[in-house]
Image (cartoon, one colour):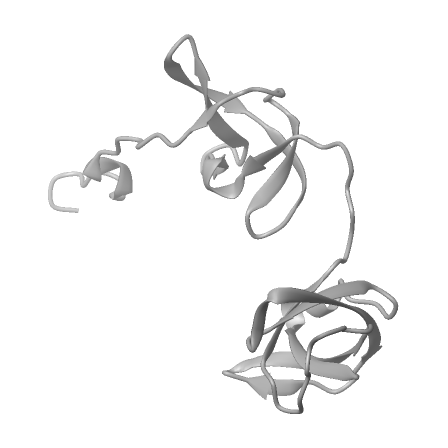
Length: 160
């Protein structure tokens, strides 16, 4: 058995034949089925205005699951495994538009403190923190106050 799916052009460069995949069928939401990327199409298809490439995943034995043609599946393809890392949630990572540095807010003695960080690998939810935070660091979401004047151009010079 196999599942054909479309992978967005942004992600297709990470996919290679032989990578492990896990699938969940909408009909069996509590069952995870293992599979392997068998092939990657060379020609894209247009999907909602963006390019996507066909990928075929061969399914391993799924005991007790009556798989039928046309069933909807969600797939997760493992493109890399990074062990023993410190990760922080993506919502906690910010970028300084002036310096380009990445930073987060960490809690120190009950106060949020801005700290520069260096990042590594990541996904849609988490990112590896290479420096700036340690195991046990609590990161915070802080609302940064901005003045409307920060978003205006240079001040006018009397009628110019």
